[in-house]
Length: 230
Image 1 (cartoon, rainbow, N blue to C red):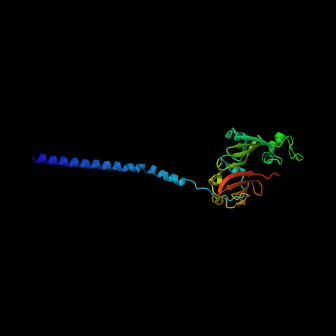
Image 2: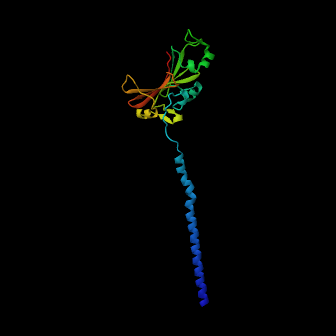
């Protein structure tokens, strides 16, 4: 009887040890699961740190045509590219630009190839009638000589202005205060309308031709590309 009791007691001890071993193994497996998810849990933090900084101050004295986008488009682009973006203009008009046009300089080679050499007496190219087509699209105006399209003006509501190199985006809600922080070298020009303020930045250093930014009631209203022609 003592031998049987001893065998039974030994069996109970072995069973208890086996149970404890299973519990420890289960504990190890359970505790290992969070560790396996740790790397993926850190990814969002890494992405957050990789977010690029905001807009930078634009202290350059000029703003070249290639440095700015109007509703995602360059202010001067091939007419075919413009047509792909705006295949159906809301309105089209054709008028005589008596003082010439920016295309006389910006697209001079094509103008000479198409209309002959520049005639000083006529004040235009030999076979050119001086007519420029204006296209009205999406709250904006563009001029074209049928080869290139060039911005005239664009409202801020439908045409956000961006300068990718400095991460600057100007929209209809952009305030004068914000604009002046982004362009600290520009000075306001008062207009006849007391509610309107204008800022000017040349497209090239020492040039009169410029982008004009208009603000009305303290908010960005529209941008204009202005050339001294007369």
